[in-house]
Structure formats: C-alpha cells, structure tokens
Image (cartoon, rainbow, N blue to C red; front, top):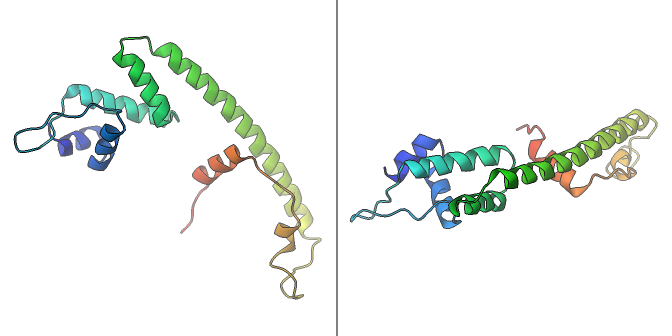
Length: 152
C-alpha cells in the first residue's frame, strides 16, 4: 500500500510516517519504479504498536529500544514492565508535587484577600503573584503545561 493508504489505515499523517521512518522506528520502505513508497501489513502493525506505546507515555527513544529488542527476537515485555515501573514512580512523584502545589495555591488564594490591589496604588502588577514563593518542580510543571486545559 502507498503511504497515504497506510496513514489512513493507522489513523496518522503521511508526515508522521516519514518522521518515524527518518527516526528509524519503521524500516525504509521500498519504492516503486515511479518512486512511491510501498508498505505492508508489518508496517501497519509496527505503527499500531508505536501509537499504543505513545498513549502509554513512552518516549520515542523508549519505543525505539523496545522495537530494537523485538527486531533481535529478544523478549520485550520484561523491558516494557521496567519502563512502566519507572513511569509509575514518576507519576506518583508528580502527583505528590501537584497535591502540594494545589494546597499552596489554595492557601495563597485564601490569604490573597488580605493583600492590597497593587495597580490602583501605583505599585507593581500584582502582589499576590510577586510575593508568592510557591514553586513546582520541572517535571510536574511540564506535565501541568501539557495537560492544563487551554482556553482560546
């Protein structure tokens, strides 16, 4: 099948397939005499695996590692379990950090009524923000930034 057909079959874009090919996640497709890439069922299955692994939060490097083991006919599930264990630990840490962050934000909000509005008094932009010493670790901030509801 041609690349457009493959993209429709697996529910992705032609650009993504080309990216995965360039990144070594899928094999370089053979081409017809006219230059069209030709893909088969094994490519459908491999792209399906990549999509599923991404839904589990696996990075492209992690996926590449699992696929490399697969390509060598080595067991993959022990490796994947170890990756998932690491993710669970990171998620637990991020959840703790986010719970602490929430608690601090609620406390800040509850005490914000005591602060004078800076702008009318000719002061800074907002004392609530500027006087806050709340911090969030980088991993949690990254998670929060990618999952925070965005409004247009």
